[in-house]
Amino acid sequence: MKKLINPDWMRRLQILLTGTALSVSVFTTTGTSEVWANSKNKVIAQTIQTLQKSDKRWIQIDLSKQRLIAWEGDRVVYGSAISSGKKSTPTLVGTFNIQSKLKTTRMRGNGYDVPNVPHAMFYQGNYGIHGAYWHKRFGTPVSHGCVNLAPKHAKWLFQWASVGTPVVIQK
Image (cartoon, rainbow, N blue to C red; front, side):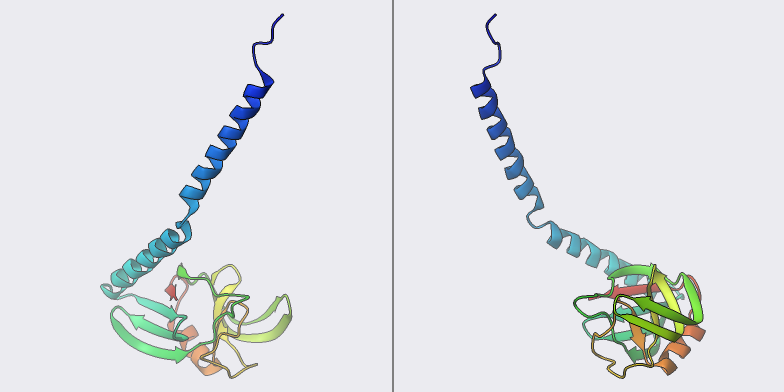
């Protein structure tokens, strides 16, 4: 019986299909990170506009300026220098809500174990805003991803914000 499928023909078809798939993959992924970043920036900008039109309390963190601003609608009520995550352990960018608050907690991770961290407010898993008594380098990214404040500023923010307060973090 004669073979209906020529092995040479199948090999050429596989090469053609693989090449086409790679071309499509390269074509569709080029620029994806830029599109994703732009869409995230648009969401952040829209969230800020919406919050400024409300009378809600909300927190804005500007990583490029290393600043935190507490807002009530479109009115600034408090501001402070921060220390966000360094390049190797960046602070998350996006819109979040305060999920939990702890007057004091122990923070542990790769390369650190800090007891009695004051006025911690977590907005995404282990990412939070809290006081930092172990350094005075506010205005410089030095953390493992959290947003560090001087203890007196962290206390003020902790007393002002509640669970559910929106947190907007932008570059």
